[in-house]
Image 1 (cartoon, rainbow, N blue to C red):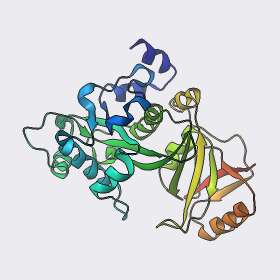
Image 2 (image 1 turned 180 degrees about the vertical axis):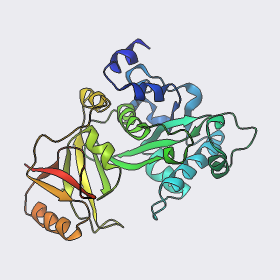
Image 3 (image 1 turned 45 degrees about the horizontal axis):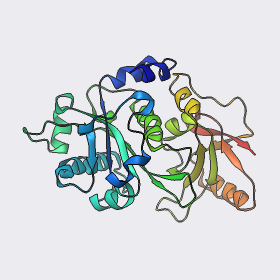
Image 4 (image 1 turned 45 degrees about the vertical axis):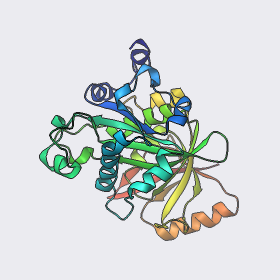
Length: 280
């Protein structure tokens, strides 16, 4: 515990409180085990919470993962079980936090279809990524949480899942795709600069979305949990989250060679969400 106490000494108390109320888990292909850090900053994932995606005894937990995903993504992006296996569990893995059934309300117990004989944990958050062909690069697959459905909210659970998950996977560079206006920006922009790769993405089901790249170090990850909002000191312009035409125009400029980076947390003005962008 000494390592985690040292690493988390500068983090906000609420994140340390969350760690006392949840348990970490990992769902993965055992052949990838050596590539993961199963004790990030000394915070060990217990043996009983390490689930193999190719063993029959993990079936119930895999069903819970699918339920977690479907409860989070109600906009048509929820996945069938085979997608988690093909796109996450085998090539990368799924990290997250779980709780015992006694911590869930009746509504969540019904959704998860918890049986009286089940004694393990139920996943309430998850982060999964896939390794890319470029050495050292990963692509975000799923980021989900049912925190909003819980009776006792764990404020900061999403960010904590994201930060420790990145450490578990040993990720230094990652790419993600998210819709403009998504609440996920509160997590990704709190963590690090977001270098925009595409501002408008026709290849995706939701065209008005961006693809971005971020780089991480241990210092960056720990600082994200300081409790201080990661505000941009300055910007070249504010990017309106709800203006699709604006995104198309920026996409044309990107394809002509210009570079743009979201440098801090979203800014709310007159009920609209904007992102502080620097050109570089």
